[in-house]
Amino acid sequence: MGLTAAEEYKVNNVFWYKVISLPATLMINNLKTGRILSIDAFRGITILVMIFVNSVAGVSGIPSWMQHAHGNEDRMTFVDVVFPAFLFIVGMSVPFAINSRLAKGDTFWQLQRHIAWRTLGLWVLGIFMVNAEKVNAAATGMSGAAWSLLFYISAILVWNVYKFKNAWLSWCFKGVGMIGLIILALIFRGGEDGTERLTPDWWGILGLIGWAYLYACIIYQVFKGVAGAIMLMIAVCIGYYILCKQPFMGEWSWLTSQAGHAAHTAIVLSGMLLTLFYFDEDLGLKGSKLVSRVTGYFALLLIAGMLLRPAYKLSKIQATPSWCLYSSAICVAIFSLLYFLIDVKQISKWTAFFRPAGSNPLLTYILPDIVFYGMLLAGISLPAVLGEGLPGIAWCAFFAVIMLFLVKGLNKLGIRLQL
Image 1 (cartoon, rainbow, N blue to C red):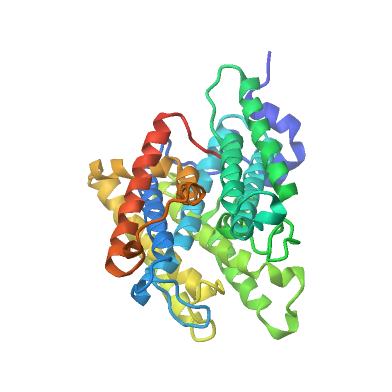
Image 2 (image 1 turned 180 degrees about the vertical axis):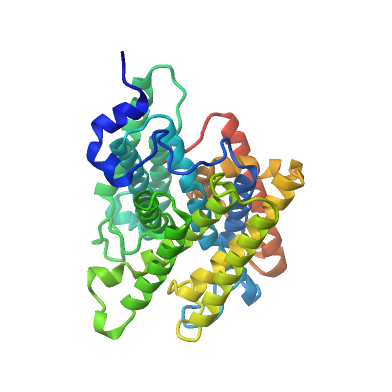
């Protein structure tokens, strides 16, 4: 008689089974099943705003509240909440993703391989996207637009979800994409003198998400999804950032270089904790008990941010604790409103517009760049009036909406990216 999935997991992973003490069901938390429409809507809205703010950044004559705050300022705008909203949503999704794979029978090491592959994918995409902005055409042998488009085509080939009956055919496409990425990395030359190679001067938005995702996944597994432990680790991450900023720590050690990643991880863990409050059925938070818990959580984030702000100003650029905590509090409020409208009041028809982007976020994220580099390669430019003031703002809003419609069409064509 064959072993059950739980028994096989125990046999193959005795040590880790004892350390992590996963229940026989292989689930870390008892989460609601199925897609959570309010999370998808939150993700889709965040992506729409992201496309808008990235586009409007190139428009002149716009008000300061539509721009990122400078690194030396003690303030934040709604633009500075877009990136932490991505991190927060990653945290909300992690428990569902990990528990789903465990429920399907993944062993401990299969799960770690999946996490490592996703992390590597985010790092690679982040590094390529950052370097796409500094291609030296003469030294590389092709224009920056051509190199960038080839990169995105290769990335789509690697991370597209194929539905071929023969798995080998899917791997053929993925293999072509991987070879393409390797070749593009080898031929890349950047900088004015064309001597720079493909390097992570910084990780890019996706790369930073990759680091925070990795650390959050480790923390979630080690502490078995216990809400109190996750709350404690948020404080530990904030404390680690503060420690790294002390003069005695120095400036060039590997430990201090992780300060920003620790701050970003705190935001991911904040989203993870909110998921447990709303969707972990073992916690049993419903009705007034749920409202009081979430309200208290929101207040705690705000108060902690206020207490830390005199010493650490609001700054997205520096990833300060006050920015992390305020951003997390804003995300708690936004998601709670969406949850009330969509899941409680069942007012959900309007979310249909955001669903394609919410279910295919990676493609939606890179699509504006693909369009931009395509226009650049084709020599197409926008009228100057669309780069200034109110007409420019209106165009950016229209462009963001068009991107969501375009993603919907690509979804129907079977182009869906998944790390």
